[in-house]
Amino acid sequence: GAVVSQHPSRVICKSGTSVKIECRSLDFQATTMFWYRQFPKQSLMLMATSNEGSKATYEQGVEKDKFLINHASLTLSTLTVTSAHPEDSSFYICSGAGTANYEQYFGPGTRLTVT
Amino acid sequence: AQSVSQHNHHVILSEAASLELGCNYSYGGTVNLFWYVQYPGQHLQLLLKYFSGDPLVKGIKGFEAEFIKSKFSFNLRKPSVQWSDTAEYFCAVNPPFSGGYNKLIFGAGTRLAVHP
Image (cartoon, rainbow over all chains, first blue to last red; front, side):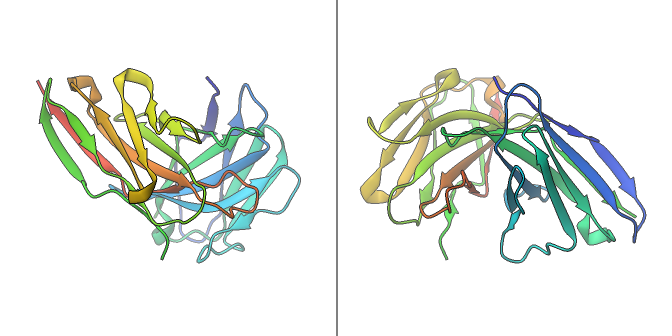
């Protein structure tokens, strides 16, 4: 099956700093990548959708200046949390999708803790 | 607001019991439907999906789901659960008018615990 990796798996940063999370599709070309946020014991909330080479489309209520998404190639997307605050602490999950089958392949997630 | 609802938040079963997890959605028009599973400490995996055709869909590990359009439902079933089915189960919908993207809206999830 298609594999998506995320790096790092865990990160701790200080309040006010920025942190970058990478999402890679290892064995397929992800024309679209998605970023989700998952709070403890809750569902995945879609944050944004990005197509390779295009600007990301953010869901309502998600600050685009705070959560910068770059999808520079068909195998890599990055999420940068800028000026992180403790309330940004969460589990961030990415997924990639190919062209036509509507199936998303999920990464293992990145746990961000902001102190 | 349009949404995906999973009514059972936490289900506890004994091995060999039958399982049915409810999923309802509120989108009109044509939708694509999915069930994902998240085993403890692992990433989300696709169990099964429905796009069109036979409304009874069979997935991996003995799971199946039935799409009932009139009820806006896509319930997940398994006739006999095993301890290894302990996991969190998410229903997801690819709503219409997603702007051409494969956008998924997830339900809140159902945590299943199977006791030996």
